[in-house]
Amino acid sequence: MDMERQRSSPICEALEQFQRRRVVPFDVPGHKRGRGNPELVKLLGERCVALDVNSMKPLDSLCNPVSVIKEAEELTAEAFGAQHAFFMVNGTTSAVQSMMLSVCKSGNKIILPRNVHKSVINALILCGGIPVYVSPSIHPQIGVALGMECAAIEAAIHANPDAVAVFVNNPTYYGICSDLRAICKLAHDHGMKLLVDEAHGTHFYFGEGLPPSAMMAGADIAAVSMHKSGGSLTQSSVLLIGKDVDYSHIRQIINLTQTTSASYLLLASLDISRRNLALRGRESFAKVVSLAEYARGEINGIGGYYAYGRELIDGADVCDYDVTKLSVHTQGIGLTGIEIYDLLRDEYDIQIEFGDIGNILAYISIGDRIQDIERLVGALEDIKRLYEKDPSDLYFGYFIQPEVVFSPQKSFYSEKEPLPIRESAGRISGESVMCYPPGIPIISPGERVTNEIIEYILFSREKGCTLQGAADPRADYLQVIKE
Image (cartoon, rainbow, N blue to C red):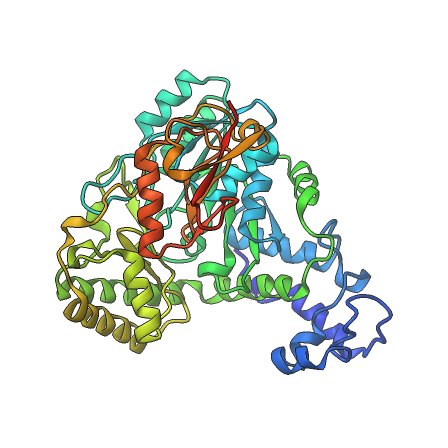
């Protein structure tokens, strides 16, 4: 990596030069540098609103970049060790769906774990791909799905030699990593692409002593959420392209769904965040690792909680662990993760990333301080003292591997009818239901509803999880395929 080149930020420099010219705007956006919307200026500030401009020749165009955006993407590819990089302003959802649509057409099979983000299932609805699920093992204590075991992937490949790709989410939301290098070799040896949802792995490219990144492992395409651990603005992301991939075709796929009015606030944040990571990423993420490991030790010292880490590594289901993730199993004190999530926010003014049935995740990043960690640890200790109860009545089935009957696309577009959810066992779901975050569907279109799934949905709702995906926001009714 050419560190001198990495000091530049082409989009930011072009925006600064454009501002100095004091151009009179007779183009969109209609707020005209904020003059038409003073309340917006008051909220966001004059400089921010003035940077909300339209694509034009001096600022390039994200749909077909030829100058400053092209240069910024090239610098990003270099910094991440990729052949090419695309800036994404529709979130990592758009990046995930673009990489899926670029390799998977109607009727194509794709090998993947079931504990994927909803964007993957939605991509299958859009393209008509057929999922071949590899069942992950479930950790017996913390109840979360583990990584993709190579032997299981190899079996799926031999059973489905016509599959076009293998898809891996690495790391998972909980920090669990699969053996990307071995999976990559398996996929490529059988003529398949390797796609990686790396939404939570930006830091793998810049930190030391962390699991290998997708590009380092030889993946063909990877979706990276720069706005998570990379420091850019929410909704900005990067799609990385490896060797021997037709990137011009991928740009065409991206342009099927990505906006033609890309926000320069998001583009500039990607540009400057890449520069910061290239220049200071190593030291920044060393600090993140130190904070997370300190917090892990302090929380485990409280008793009842289990902040898990590298001890999960077994060389098969968990090949590596992302120690920047502060994932904590909470049921040892008799509370679900979502209950602690709510208590932290409502009683202690602490907003963590998510709580589910058994765990919480506190996202530790380059913006955290030791005093923030101390406050979190103190609040968890206080919650244990004030709210601890008998854990025996808590639900343990955090991850269920449903039976797939029809493809997501066929099921989503089939004629459906609403049924009271308690009466839907045995029927085929025509919609998704998930707790968000983390956004992993409990059930997806085309999967058979079971009593266990119904119990999980209702228990999650009772404990305060936010349900998404269903036509009925409360999930009292479930849309099932008409028989």
